[in-house]
Amino acid sequence: MLVDFHMHSTFSDGVETPQSLLQHAMEHNISIMALTDHDEIDGIDELLSQPSIVKIITGCEFSGHYKGKDIHILGYNFDRRHRGICEFIDFFKNKRKSRIIEIINRCNEHGYHISFEELQKLYPHTKAYGRPHVAQLLINHGYATDVQTVFSTILSSKSPCYVPKVKLSVPEIIDIIHNANGLAIMAHPKLINNDTYVEELLEFDFDGVEVYHSKHTKDDIDKYLTLANQRSLVVTGGSDYHGIPNRYPHFLGEFTVRSEQLTDFLGRISENI
Image 1 (cartoon, one colour):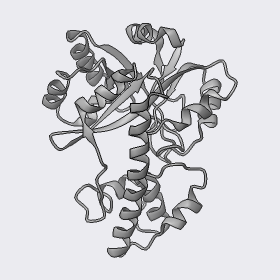
Image 2 (cartoon, rainbow, N blue to C red; image 1 turned 90 degrees about the horizontal axis):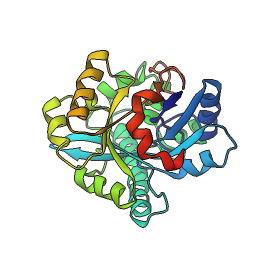
Image 3 (spheres, rainbow, N blue to C red; image 1 turned 90 degrees about the vertical axis):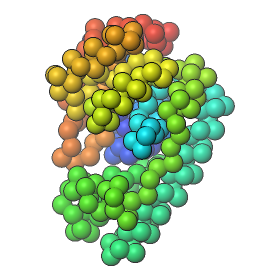
């Protein structure tokens, strides 16, 4: 049985609607999926409103920080009506919009002439804008050739056009997820780019590790699987699909995980499936 517990829609920085993601999941025989938009859960309701044989797990990718590093934490199977979750999401919605407007203002100050109105026209169905959306706008204006180039130059963390996200500490986010009866999973540990930090972070009250990820090599998988097993943590996996052109995975279903690789995780969320 194929599963995918990490993907993004137009409700954060993905380019496909939840309905489109669900359709592709069915086309590629994905049996269980989770929509994990960044600090956003509204897309889950749209996903659940669609008739489907695909089982839907409640998910979200939360933004945290640790020693100056961006740390992403996947929450699963939480009560999406829980007051703490709802207050957290509302807070980030306001901060996310003001951040993008400030990024665009800084771009203009440094000679990159784009506007928020253009962004809305380019992505009329997007509910929450992120750096990938601004990157595509910059590409359309001829300021760069691809998203990765924008991320390493105009919108890199060292650029004057960059505006950091508002982030909570890792323990705070874990507590928010746990208080809503969810599971807290460390997302794509390879992308932290510091395995010492990974091991330190796993001293916090994580429930599991995203071992299987589209950017993890076989050696990465073996390493993080060992770390998870040593700490009796559940193992999860997903494609981290965004639908961004020329970025792997190129379509939902290109990277999947087999359910037998995630037995303990599926057991923990068995009431939903």
